[in-house]
Length: 237
Image (cartoon, rainbow, N blue to C red; front, side, top):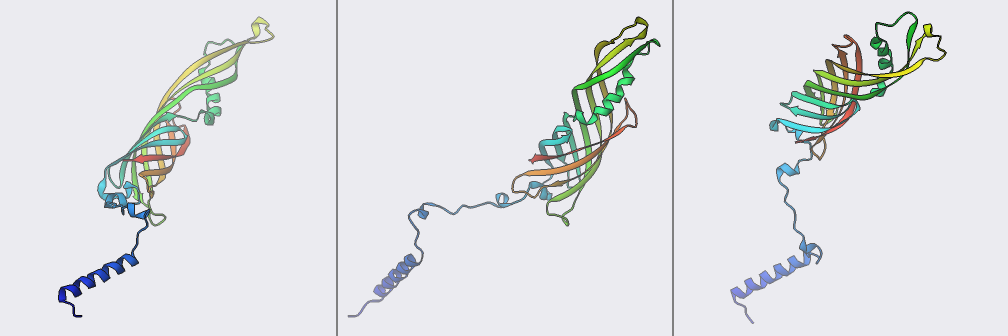
């Protein structure tokens, strides 16, 4: 029996299709799924900070340490940024400093027979605000996504202290003194120098940072310096 040319073509197509089904056979479970299409923007596995062509950026997060603060950063360009923090200082780190400040609040009208003795103190509140201008540069030779930065800024502090004391007057022949307390408001400000590093090689738009600051008082106790610092996370958008 002889076959026509169309019959040979039809037979060839049937053989190819049947072999294809034999080699690639989807299970009933997998046949309902589609291969997802990921755009170039979503396919990136890095924080936006690594995309130099997309500046400026902003970020918002938390900083733990001294002080504990809500922190904001504006990345104007690859090298320049502005940061602002607002929060609460770690008052426990300044216990000795606040205790030594007690004598500065004693009245000048005490008689020779009178004296005031320090007993204790506590910080009722200790808030601060600071703003910093930063210069940053890549440190990818150390680690991908790592940036170093340094800068200068200004810090404002407002502290409310309560002091407990004992008042003695030897002219009254008192065996025990008289207990008392007073509150003192301390508002001051000064220069801040900061160094730190920021790491942003994450699959999420976040950055982690560690920084150290040196604060120099310019009002209540001019020239007095203290170290501050902390670690934190910011969400970048």
